[in-house]
Image 1 (cartoon, rainbow, N blue to C red):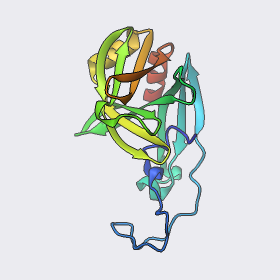
Image 2 (cartoon, helix red, strand yellow):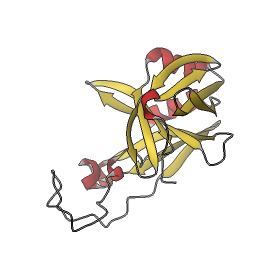
Image 3 (cartoon, rainbow, N blue to C red):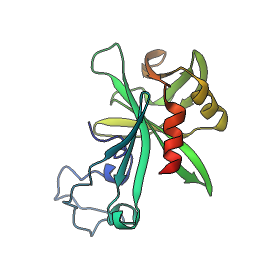
Image 4 (tube, rainbow, N blue to C red):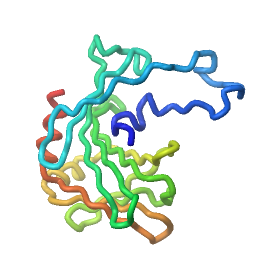
Length: 191
């Protein structure tokens, strides 16, 4: 599986299956990139959470690795009791409307029921739903900003239960441990 930081980032752009098809949009006249993105590096582990950083090439976001263009996030993966079904939660700090926000990216397998999004429960209490934003060939990505009350529940909780759906009312729960969540989030502040 690709790095959690890569999914949903600048490298999630897809090349057309048939290169002879007419390209359109802002990148229509650019030659396809052949350069591989820099490999991500796990910089810390706190409990069941890993903190990972990746240098961004100049064309990915305008800043080169030499000038500090680095993306960091914390992540954890879970598997369902159903074989071959899992998800990864990536938490990154970003900016939205001029304010710093904590973004949740839930990466689920292709074939999920998109209208319901991903349900979140913390220690058995329903908290919210994260809506799906897009699907790429190997995964569907749900993205939402974490509200301050949700962050507090994640910091104080023991288990987060993420539920993806295969159809209306047919959910597959997957548990993530919250052990080390607060320390990993504090680590992101340092990076």
